Amino acid sequence: MLSSTHPDFIPFNRPHLAGPELMYIQQAVAAGKLSGNGQFTQRCQRFFEQQYGIGKALLTTSGTAALEMAALLLNLQPGDEVIVPSYTFTSTANAFVLRGARIVFADSCADHPNLDPAEVARLITPRTRAIVPVHYAGAACDMDALLALARQHGLWVVEDAAQAIEGYYRGKRLGTLGHLAAFSFHETKNISAGEGGLLAVNDPQLAARAEIIWEKGTNRAAFFRGEAARYEWVDIGSSFLPSELNAAYLWAQLEALADIQRRREHLWRRYAEAFEPLRDAGYFELLPVPAGATSNWHLFAVVCRSQTERDALLAYLTSQHILAVFHYLPLHASPFYHARHDGRPLPHAERFGRCLVRLPLFYDLTPEQQDRVVAAVLAFYAGREASSSS
Ligand SMILES: *Cc1c(COP(=O)(O)O)cnc(C)c1O
Image (cartoon, rainbow, N blue to C red; front, side, top):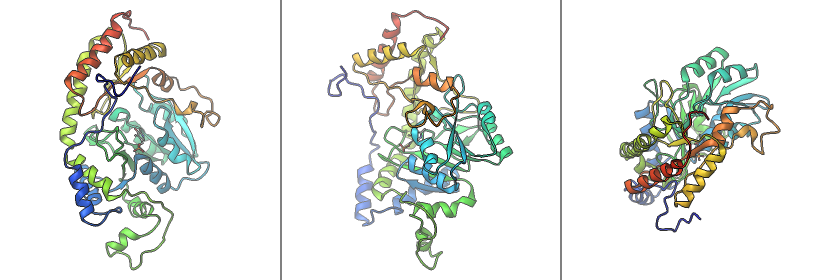
């Protein structure tokens, strides 16, 4: 059995402390301002505005909250349709369901969980309002095709860039391509605030209202900049801004971003090198880096030949005290949505849901631990037939 207290236990993820997190939290406490939109929040936001070229960056309590802000900003109404991949985290769809929108789930590409643009094109109707590309594993969707569809049909594009910090598409940063984009700083992402996120407002026409929605429907931010005579309720909104404690923690992670990325790249490449021969022999697939995309080293996955083999691999890793995980159960078949779904099978999303395994990949994974993960996967396949078919 897998016990996290076993001396050989290798977790799936462990939060990495860059160093100054606690010092910055102490500074935030000493500054006497712990609520949102203080110095650390503004430093984090400026980082994304200046380094990423995002018009307006708003720190949020989660990636989920950033997606919910996006749905509010687009004024979605009951009956509006939003095209979302089925193979994604719940929040990608739930944010729009909260506004009464109808989710039209699109299938993934055959060799990668990202949205298949040809499938998206077939699903556009006169009621479609938005497309939500999820950059799975931090690797860009085919944005040229998706943005062209959006232009042609007058649709909003909201990037779910939750996993995609430091990812690029044809030289442009992910999170800057859609009208809006959501990043996540959840504990399992490349950099973390425990829970946290960011809304990138790339369409300048949405910026002023984004700030109001962010601050509970008030003009508070504009008032404190001296741009409004009174501080009052001007629109709908909610409490989307995190406290300075979270922002202080995140600032330490942002300062360490380059170092964190280097370390993750090193680990990612070691896995790739170790597993490419098995991939070539047909034991499993590795996710390709799609055309025009880069890896941001967010996750390392193998796609098994069957669910039976996937479950056997996970069980074997468990017996070796290694926690690997599968995800996502496709949302079109979820208990909440399956009765609302139009019944189309989404075979690629279903296959990734049955066959994909994520291996431990985190900053403090030691070379010895990674060698043990590699050895365990190799040992599992040593007893099995090579095949090139799935
Ligand atoms: C992590 C994640 C989210 C949610 O982000 P939180 O910060 O956990 O709310 C949304 N979409 C995708 C694709 C994610 O990976």
